[in-house]
Length: 181
Image (tube, rainbow, N blue to C red):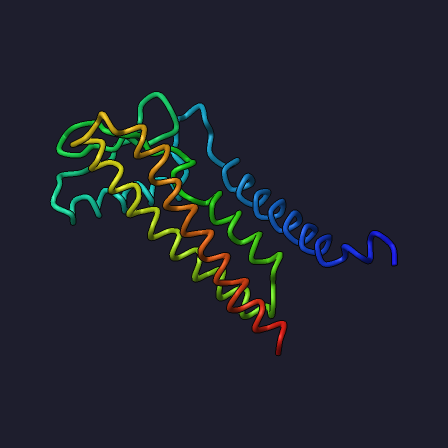
């Protein structure tokens, strides 16, 4: 047997992952290209995430609102009338969802099972991201000295930890069971 046939499962995984990641990233970049950076317009997904995070902060008992940033493509996030954060394109978790989906596609089973798991994962990631932003902004209001630690360490570990757990569940529960059937 040759080196290619010996590594066929790995090469198939790698090819499916790379292709799905590139296609999804390309679609997302095409979506982002419709927004003119010179007008400082935030993309719709990011703006919706900001609005929903602000609504959650209000639900949790704090005054909150967002407003367009006058000098960059972001929204300013206020808690209790204090500017605590800006919501930029990277805050919307779409890149995390793309990475998640590419991995699931690389270990795909049936189309229906794979699509449903990706959809469920997107919903979980999206909702946790809204919670993440709400908690970061509340923390930034009351504990500004820990802002960098919370934003750069605690919550990335949390969100990527959840994605990792979703990957493990997919591989152990769905992918292996589908391979046995």
